[in-house]
Image 1 (cartoon, rainbow over the protein chains, first blue to last red):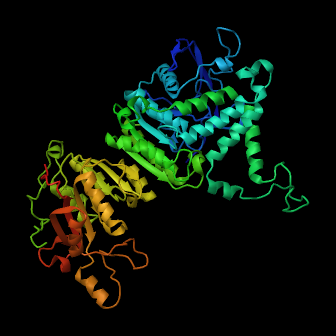
Image 2: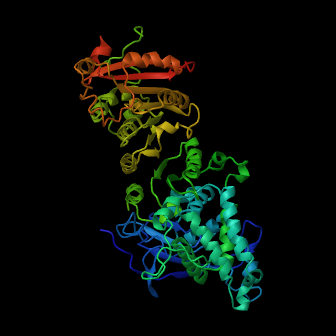
Image 3: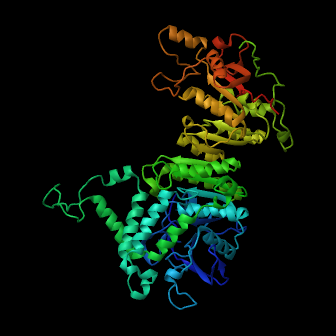
Length: 384
Length: 239
């Protein structure tokens, strides 16, 4: 029977040793915010690291102790009896460096100046995150993860793990991801960043000192993002051309001939944008979209992904969704092809789901049963 | 085509039919018989297994639930990959721990480099594909040798049914005309006529009915044809 991991409390883990970053700088001490579910076995062989995407956090499953409505972002995937079964696996959720949910990021105080890092927080990469996560694994005494798993940007971290620490990853579960962003992907990110950078409340990234935040920029950034997370069909089904009306409003289906919210889809985007602007940090949005842009493990191999994957040892489960046009199935197939070139152990599923990129967060029986079957095999392998 | 050597399923010294060294080295050596017993679900599996070399790389095109690859891996220690479009098949493969790539064979085999597999298997899949010539060319492009099997529409009861005015329904063709996944109707003679046109050289043939080898009148008496083939000019004998 599936159930929830229940009420969860995050922990902060401090790392005193400086972390060298890909951009050449060094991050002095830093904190990582972490949640764990399940029990680490005596051999420490049943650990699974779950990596988050753009706007998520360490809070993967269960409900927050301080807010019973705050459900983990992958609660349908992780928990007792769920596809990633916490009765068998010890699951770690970690908030990445540069994010805004408790790990060290632009909102944190820069020890060298005593004021928030703001725009001075170093531009960080997927590889930097993985190095920080490796130290986190060390702190738990985990030499090798049974699996590293993630969707979208989280999937990139899983792939990076298998490249950077080949002997420390048993399996890589890569969902709705890509080995690199396309020009179109980068273009959307640039529009989102431009919205934030051009907001008068941005103050060059030091808005904290002015007690404001660039809400307008964040709203537009989130609206752009949301459009790319949904498929055209899904938007048509959810909203179509339905007009936004109070139930008993006069006027029926007549246009208002104004620029107020007229269509349901506008109302949805504004709602999502407003909500996001309240809880997310603009500097974090800039950093994480940049980390997405920069990710390209084939870059130092003249664009040859097969060469980049030469030293991997992990087994892979790669999943894409047919209507995902942000990271389309063709992107996942690039990864699969490079793995096949090395005859790596790989399973690739292309789930025919209508929900676009967002499908990786949704409950779909075909998708979840496949992940469940895959973890069953891992559990058998490690005797969990 | 009469110069073709029909391989009898019962001949013990057919290629790769000896007990594999890999299996013999293990605690419980696999006998050919144990392999064949576990392959009973599909009549052509036995012939296919006979033509698979131990520890070779095998690509099963239209692998279904992964049964063939699972057995070949357990008994012959092959490195296997399956291609399957059906969700239930993909899930069944994952449950067995069989590598599977979900895709439509009609889209070709672009994920696979030339000659990157020892063997490709098209087991009763050919008749379900529209792009017949393309998939045959692709099959011998990606693998040094291939096994192709298909139900023989020339089997005499099928011909009789057509003479009687109805499309055949039999053990080998268990579907009605309106719900069959078979989109290409072919006979043994048809396949052998097409093979050179699509750059395929036939190495061996085994024609079966009811699990038994048909030694004469194969295009009348055989309901299932199994071929070992390679690309024309690939000409290297199997290891």
